Length: 385
Ligand SMILES: [Zn+2]
Image (cartoon, rainbow, N blue to C red; front, side, top):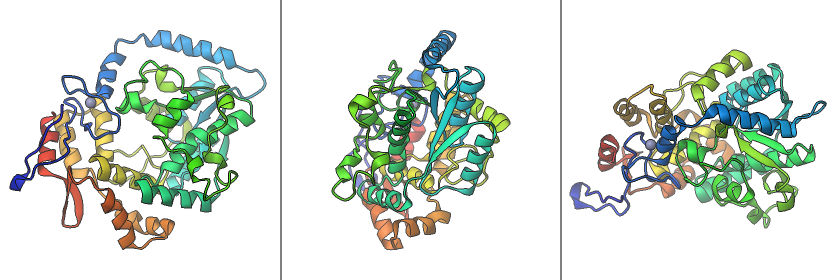
């Protein structure tokens, strides 16, 4: 349902944006799908979830675990950063499903102190953990290249979460991997995965890597350099059974937070940038840039993402959420600017040139040196259509 905005000064916007009438997801979100009532696929899923027989799903998960259960060895891989969701999945796998999880974390590019502490606390709560710490110079160069070329500074981490984890699973001969949520269905994106219980290599590359194959970087790096980022051979990938927790239990981030605090020593943070929550996305300095890039390219940031969870969880109204987003979304993490410049080996001018080159000027305008939503877009956000 495309719209054309008439701006002040009669400038006709070339690209339209619409918002979900239930949450604040914009049509600029990659792959998101809206129905005739302008409801996004994540909100349709939230509705559908209520009528799903989750007890039956749980039984199926138990049976799936039985297929892979081992008495004397690790039998499931749980990717976990020490945050609320991975900690929750690992805990339930171990204590409620009787599995022997081997947890794997890929170090984020610029780990925060609280991120380090939470990961240690998680391990100390009774888990075996393999930490993959890629060569920092290669990691840094990859992050810089993706920042400059795509405004996706954190994407090397995102890719490694599946590629590096798959390599370790194959090495240890543990074919069963369970991730947290399948985000396309849960947060809005492609609607093709609602009934897909397992990840295949096609969806891994097309959706979760957004088409990026780091094998294209082999002109600049050796295969050994890129080991953590290259997909295993197709025949090997087929040996893995990769699923998501959100397919078997109704995804509830508050429940995860509470359990992770109580059982796994999760610590929260204060003064988060661009939002109002204190328990998510705490482990990486680049995460704040990642959300800022999202705002620059698609016009929504972390406050929108967090508000959408609040609306779905019945903790706030759409109107309350709009006010929070207007106040908080799109804040640049000023405190970290020095970290970014140092990490990318750039001066401030070069850094902002990259950011500005990706700014979606159909929906953003620069006021007093800061990108913000255009009035017509704020109007659409408020109205919700
Ligand atoms: Zn929605």
